[in-house]
Amino acid sequence: MTGHKKQQIFFRQAFKSEQLSHAYMLTGQEGIGKKIFAKAFAKGLLCPHERFFEQCDCPSCKQAENGSHPDFHVYEEKDGKWEEKSNLKIEGIRQISENAAMSAKGWRIFIIDNVHILCLADAGAASALLKTIEEPGINTVFLLITHRPDKVLSTIQSRCVNVFFDPLHDSELASVLKSKRVEPDFPLPYAAGSVSTALTLLDIDVQGLLSSLNYKNFDKLGMQILAMSDKNKFTAAVSVIQSWFLSIYKRTLNPEIAVFLQYTGAVLKNLTYNVNMQLLLLDFYIKLTNSLALAEAEK
Ligand SMILES: [Zn+2]
Image (cartoon, rainbow, N blue to C red; front, side, top):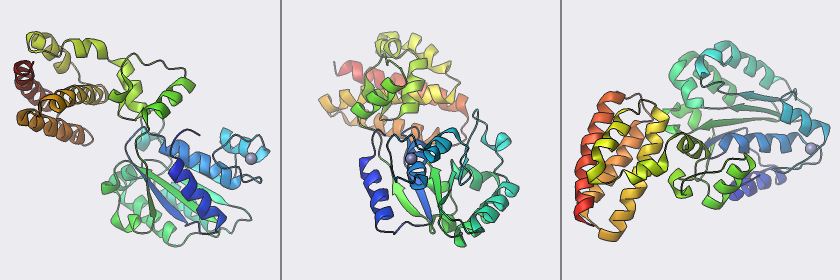
């Protein structure tokens, strides 16, 4: 398994010293492999050979991989529609409670992806989850995954061991993309260590965007920006623009460019909330135009 070596050691040691907690919250930005990590750990925990984070062909690992292991339950988003398609409504949580309370011979693992959405969408389910984590069954481990821990009930948070995941290094990101047979046509640092950002960047014309980042071209750039109604694509474009301005700031230390960089940070944060895209695009376009004029003056 690529990346997150520190976290691998942390979980291996907790297992070896019989100090596994019954609930963990895996946090860190989107698209850096938290869920892949959780699944790899769960597989190792169920494996009779205790092969964590590595390839194993035993029947248990095969079952865990193809989703048929009876003691391994994953609740996740499907086709981008977590709330509609998920069975993680209150009934689902009750079922988890019943399953988790049964004493198991071996380990029993529950992974809940995007647990913050559960907290936002269904207060009943969230409190059922809290109750389940408070009174877990024997040998039961919950791995809750979120990039928005601030949206998770503090009562749930306080019962979990928080494990933070850093963005992937560029070399790690490169090897994950290679394993997916994806060839990026942009400099890897623009993806900021996130596989999902890298995949979104493939959908936008990064080279075209970079080449139109100058004051003379701002009409063309404006059209490109204002047409980005897709939140993921706009987020990826803002990341690219931010990196571009960061390189200018490093060279010039222009305080006004620093202000724009702070603004891009705030935009990226706002994009994780429900924002009015049209207003945001327009505001971004205006501020970007001003900052391009500044950048032009620094040339
Ligand atoms: Zn195995």
